[in-house]
Length: 392
Image (cartoon, rainbow, N blue to C red; front, side):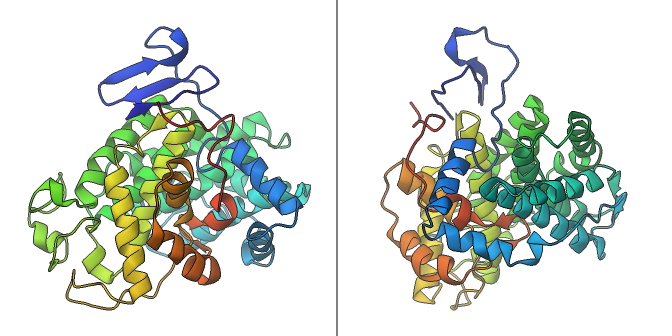
């Protein structure tokens, strides 16, 4: 990971320990930037200005949220969550509603959205635990934690969310989510990456340096084990929980090519989109806190973006697996990675750009589990701002 220059004192977390920018002593407490999960305040303000100017696609994307059920839902908080039953959908829709209404408040200044978002978050502050007793609990905690936390990060800016209420929500994360997220799933790699997405966002909201470091280390290990490069050798290096039979765990690829993911041959794009989106969300959260994990993962993440986008565009898996046609699912989760690698880093990603223009911005599912409204929040963001400087 690379150190990044920020306009404020920040601790940077490295694989070998801690380093502090600005000349402060090593070991000082980390200073978190808020909001600093999936979006920074500078980015939110830039999008808001584009909406106020009537610019597309942002104005149209905001209209989609306003017309969705996510703009209307109220609170349905639970004390105990059975992730194998209907509770899973109750939590799923409330998380999406809280995030949607947080965005609607910020971009429109309509306080009714703020009050509703806070009511949803407060209703979930009483959650005690996940009760299914299986790894589905870990996946569910990842899915909704990765949405509740960014919503809460935005609502930090709303003066009507009382400090005691914010503290209750932080305590709920520690009580109910930490036990499910700090133990990595041994299911397919998309679950671990979804957990990592949630870990990183919750760590920022809770200002939990230890959790933040754990998320970084998990991301480093899982990225190498999920996104394959030919330079890794004839097969990827497995990590604990991968089952011991790589061909089976990777669903029997016919060709091992750059950008192949552990689930490419599973269902031709469905789970790979969740995994790729989650990995990039975690990297973006790290970026907003001054840590660059994008650069070390550039060959893996860009190869995965371009391979999957090329397969979607061609309508063919191009011989990598026994099934030829890609899964028809398209999720609004390509903008974060494209913004960084093209917008910030200046790389040419032609397949990804074309997919965004032809399939994602025109017809993708805008909100599904932890993948929500990236076209609104990240489409064509400027390369940098006062809180977004390139790594050094």
